[in-house]
Structures are given as structure tokens and as C-alpha cells.
Image (tube, rainbow, N blue to C red):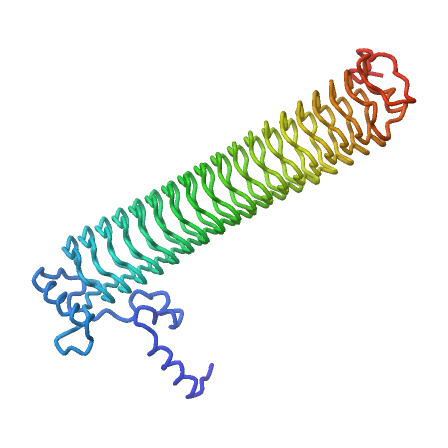
Length: 476
């Protein structure tokens, strides 16, 4: 049997006595934790009973005097835990620190009520009206607020662990640093709300509306935001690791320096979103719309951007280390000095893009489109670019050493100063290309490539015979 010394037990008693009643459950045994809403036990004479309107007003006046001065002998804190206050009219009432744990307040009228630091754990506030109310520091753990109207309510630092707010209205509400871990906000309306540094870990916000909501520094890790509307939401520095954002609308959302490690953004709409310096490592962006998005300096290491639309996106200095870019569309995108080491993309489109100083050694972009792209000083050392199209592209000073360029097309391309040491040029088409100042090109390489009368060759190399159809098709 486990033994405790008298001092240990005594200290434990002091700690429990010193705790506020609404939080004493946390220090109890595992058994008391399981029945936390019953600790302390409800001793209200109106437990599971309706409270007459006149009695309620009398209790309210006494409570208001208690709030003003607790030493008043005619004052007493209102304790109506587990009472039935359905449809009660408490507009503008001062209910600061009131005990309403487990109380039924369905359709209660509480606009402009002061519920600061009130004990409402497990209370039923379904369809209650709480517009312009003060819930700062209130205990709403496991409270039911389905369909409740909390528009313009203030709930800074309120505790809403596992609360149910399905379809609740929180338009223009302020819940800074509120604790919403595990809460259910499915289809809730948080438009223009202030949730700065709020804690939503594991919460459900499926289909929720967060248009213009301020979620700066909020913790949204492992939240479910599937099909949520976050148009123009402020998510700067927010934590969204492992968040489910499939089909979410993040148009023009500000996610600068946000953390989205392993987040699911499949088919999400991120048009014109700001993702500068964001952490998107291992994120799934399959089919995501990133048209005109700002991803400067973003980290997309091993991210999946299969069939993603990055038309005109800004990705200077972005990190796409080992990213998967199959059929992704980077038309007119800016990838200057971006890092694509080991990145892979089949039929990826980089047409008209600015890829100056792109760093993509050991990458693989088979049958990709680089037409009319700027690839000045790009590094493709050891890359696999078979069948890709570089027609009319600017590849001056590009590094193509040891690159596989079989069947690639460079029609009218400018490769001045480019390095082609040990590159495989089998059946590569250089018709009309500028090769006069390339470095490392040998006659052996040139003999297996295709050139025409307009191809500018370097001094000392002779023009091979015109390509036969068999040679173009890779036949022996």
C-alpha cells in the first residue's frame, strides 16, 4: 500500500483549499477527473428545477451587491448550478463570478450581460443570446453553445475546452488567448472576429466562416478546417501543423511566417495569399490554387504540389527541396534563386517564368515546359531533363554539366556561356540555338544532337549531318 506522510497530506489539503472551486477538479484523483463537472458538488436548492422570475431577480440583486462588496451581510454570490433557466431574461445583468455550472440556459436572453470569470462549465446555452456580453476569463468547459449568438462578445482568456459551438455566431467577437482545445465550431461564423493567440489545438472548424478574422499567433495545430472560409484572414505566425485545410478558401489570407508543417491543403484556394517565409514542409498542396500567391522564402521541402496552379506566383528564394511537382503550373511564375535540389516534376509547366539563378542540381523534370523562360545562371547539374522544351528560353551561363538532355528541345534558345560538360545531348534539338560560346561541348556530344544551318556553333566544332527521322526518334 502506498503511504503518505502527514506533512504531504497536509500540504495537499492546503493546495486544494487554495484552488478556485471551478478548477479544483484538476487536482483530484482520476475518479474525480472523470466526474469533473460534479466537483464541487452542486448544493443549489434549485438543482434541476426552474427558478421563478421574481426569485431570480431577488437572487440577482443580492449577487450584484456581492460583486460590489463581498462583506455586505445582505449580499450573496448567486449559485444556481444545474438549475433550469431556459429562456430567462438576463439582459445587461451583472453575473460576474456567478456559479452556473451545468445550468440549463437554453434560449436565455443575455445580451450585454457581464459574465466575466463566471463558472459555466457544462452549461447548456443552446440558442442563447449573448450579443455584446462579457465572458472574459469565464469557465465554459464542455458548455453547449450550439446556435448561440455571441456577436461582439468579449471572451478574452475564456476556457472553452471541448465546448460545442456548432453553428454559433461569433461575428466581431473578441476571444484573445481563449482556450478552445477540442472545441466543435462546425459551421460557426467567426467573421471579423479577434482570436489573436487563441488556442484551438485539435478543434473542429469544418465549414466555419472566418472571413477577415484575426488569428495572429493562434495555435491551430491538428484542427479540422475542411471547406472553411478564411478569405483575408490574418494568420501571421499561426501554428497550423497537421491541420486539415482540404478545400479551404484562403483567398488573400495573410499567412506570413505561419507554420503549416504536414498540413493538408489539397484543393485549397490560396489565390493571392501571402505565404512569405511560411513553413510548408511535407505539406499536401495537390490541386491547390496558388495563383498570384506570395511564397517568397517559403519552405516547401518535400511538399506535394501535384497539379497545383502557381500561375504568376512569387517564389524567389523559396525552398522546394525534393518537392513533388508533377503537372504543376508555374506559368509566368518568379522562381529566382529558388532551391529545387532533388525536386521532381513530370510535365511541369515553367513557361515564361523567371528562373534566374535557380538551384536545381539532381532534380528531375522530364517532359517539362521551359519555353521562353529566363534561366540565366540556373544550375541543373546532374539533373534529368529528358524530353523537356527550352525553346526560345534564355539559358545564358546556365550550368548543365552531367545533365540528361535526351530528346530535349532548345529551338532558338540562347545558351551563351552555358556549361555542357558531359551532358547527354542524344537527339536534343538545337535548331537555331545560340551555342557559339558554350563551355565543355565536344564534337562527340554534338554528333548525337540535332542542329540546323541557323545553329551557332562554338569555334573548332564542325556541323554534323542533318538529323534523320530515325535519329530524331532514337532508332538505331
